[in-house]
Image 1 (tube, rainbow, N blue to C red):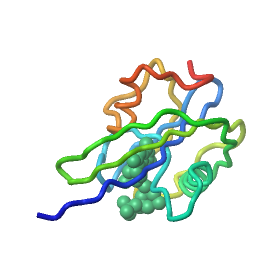
Image 2 (cartoon, protein in one colour):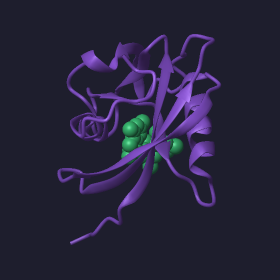
Image 3 (cartoon, rainbow, N blue to C red):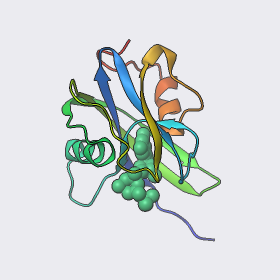
Image 4 (spheres, rainbow, N blue to C red):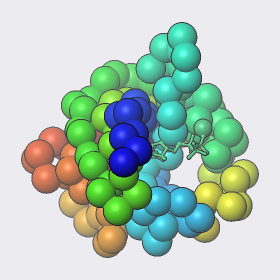
Length: 138
Ligand code: 8DG
Ligand code: MG
């Protein structure tokens, strides 16, 4: 049996006017679920740099990182993937998110933390279940 080593993901909580940005995933594990922008931490990369890079690649938005959130550990047993997701908090007051990776994301939308959509990508669901509320989120 093939064993997959756990990988490090970075999930970026971008706050604007009290809401956070989520994208609907397509084409990969968690297809059809709503996820924070983010991605794999690359070799030698700082977590905050990964957050800035992934958001820019996926949306074209330039964020300002404001802090670190919790982490979650999620096993996708069907796909035999295991991610530890490090959450980063950020602000971005300008520009509309673009769909720069149309094979990975169907649409971007802003949501209140108190009214997140379903289904959630497992790392986001785990984070939400901890009771954590990002700074500035409504
Ligand atoms: P690959 O699947 O082709 O190897 O990677 P990629 O094409 O570079 O994917 P990516 O968009 O850079 O990274 C997405 C991966 O990051 C995803 O497979 C799981 C991981 N990830 C987490 N948590 C989160 C999260 O909250 N949001 C996003 N977008 N990705 C996350 O572990
Ligand atoms: Mg990537």
